[in-house]
Image 1 (cartoon, rainbow, N blue to C red):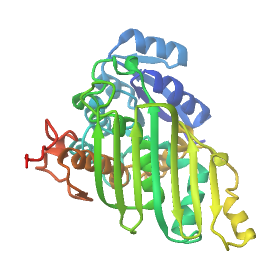
Image 2: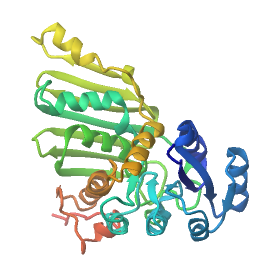
Image 3: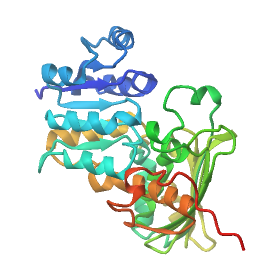
Length: 367
């Protein structure tokens, strides 16, 4: 029998308790959660006591050295992701890091540089919306040409966050989170949009802080041109009382639409055929097969299989960077007023090291 993967959890807040630990437990004998780390000793001891985790640490390096985990799950605030991911990789552990993966493209590239050679260890990002079976079905409809060429898309993450959400230290700051609602919330839908539509080519954007008075934005909008020629709108908000997450893609032969909030199943998709599409063909499009909802568990199953096989997991390396690059380009366009091309943010660009880039948006000269 194959030995379980030794897992350690870094950061014991809500996402670790509510999403990661239950997913690890549901895998049964596939994983063994051997340790947890948090700088708050009481928090980590409570987490271990409640979750049946045998070893609690307030020193990440000591935990890595003593427990030698095969997988480290990073659930700490974004400001710590690059340092902690790099430390785990250098210890020989694979990493599964919560979104956003880090605060900048510079930090992401440093994380990737710490990965091992062929066989790993590798660092993957928590982008669980890629792993619902219905999204995989829709992706195949698009990539295989069944629904024709994608033409117009809409990617929407309009959520609501109150003042209490922004009260913890670092929330709503460039140094603490690397961005606002686009980076912290919208990146999930953005990642799914890119998963379905492929490479983007250009972005033009606006962003603003309309309610919360934070350094970072609480609203952003963007126009995105894809390499395929498709055009998309992207809307992100933390000020919308009627919360919804939505992706709509109008193709030549069908409209594909997903409406949900924090996760979806096959029932949340709607496929509307264009006039003239034969009914049997449209019915086949709507048959997504056995339903696997999007979830941390769905991605974790894929990740552990990749770890055992020694192959690069999805949402890692260049594949995991695409969403972060689009977010950084959105911020640059919003700050400068200029369109930004894919691949246009490189070392030496201020937006490479901080998506905020410049202290103030560019102001047009008076006429």
